[in-house]
Amino acid sequence: MNYGTNRVTNDADLIDKMKKYRLWIFLVISATYLVSYFHRAAPAVVGPEIMNEFSLAPSALGFIGSMYFWAYAATALPAGLLADSWGSRKTIAAFVFLAGIGGFVFSLATDVVSMAWGRFIIGFGVGVVYVAAMRILADWYKPDELATYSGVLLAVGNIGALISTTPLVFLMGSIGWRNSFSLVAVLTMVASVIAYRVIRDKPNEMGFPSFKEMSGTVTQDANEKTSLSEAIKVVFCNRKFYLLGLLLFSFYGTFMGVGSLWAGPYLQNIYGISKQLAGNILMMFPLGMVLGCPLSGYVSDKILKSRKKVLLWGCILHILCYIPLLFLADSLSIVILYALFFWYGVSGGTFVSCFVCAQEIYEPRFAGTAVGALNIFLFSGGAFYQYVMGMVINSYAPLAPGVYPLAAYQAAFTIPACGLLLGIIAFVFFKENRDK
Image (cartoon, rainbow, N blue to C red; front, side, top):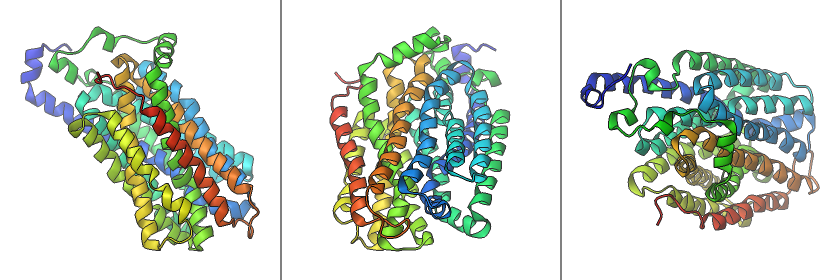
């Protein structure tokens, strides 16, 4: 159905229906992303349990944890291409169902290899969600809403990370870690079915106009199908993309390496606290991101109106967290640890502006591919830091089975701190399209 510009602008009832339906789509996408983030952050809590059950070295746990991120990185570019061609609805539904299968593989694993395969399948499955979601947001929302809603989406995702802390500790205590992950696998499959039934790729599939049509700014390019070779050439032949990617490799990689894996063993080894208390402290990280992601998106859209400023200052504020982790690692009070991991999440949440920043480098028809390609840097960083930090810790002699000294963790935390500093230096040279 075609709508003239004047008719669309004056049809308030149609616009209201479109906004209501896009809310339902947003809620369903958020549910799938919540499941994705649960899987991503769970190793920080279940990691020590797995190390004890299988007598794993830190390097082995780092390997298992990193497989999720390597798979996520491998899926990133195909996810963007699939979202731009096959459609986000089918992409999300099919791959999230696959992640549910991976959840069962992980919960039934009997050795390192099968656990690694489970994590890989999970990462491969959920790796499409955010990229495909950004494609949908680009079609259902205004340009000055994108950073805000992508921030809200990431905030909802971090509720999944919250569930993977204290609530997961409680669930594991009640039914065991294997049954806990089997339950999550079932919920993951349910989310995929709901996604297929509710999500629609574009407003016109429901008879609604897009905001670009209403404003008269829709272009032929925005509706063109994009070939694989053209998309790859355009996206990867832009210097700005690599400057942004280098920053995100370390920015996202560092808080996945620390917050989603090694912070748990660090708290239990160095402070001798229980799994429950460690889970409570770790919960501050995703809780901080629940605040930081939408806040930074709003600041980027409405206040500073700059993706670069939000990313740069967010990284600077984030790297300050490593001062106590490096120099006061064994002498922080419990209250300070709570505050530290909360600030770790708030400052880390500023990374959300990177996706809109990537989209704005290119024409709208390359939106999915741009976000997918950027995710290669994000999740390669997550895999790199989880594994390398595990190797560093493993190079120190254990004090007891599964217990490593302070120096091991200080050395491990040095890796992400230095990586983030290098990323900040590179990003200084990034120029936004609005920059003169």
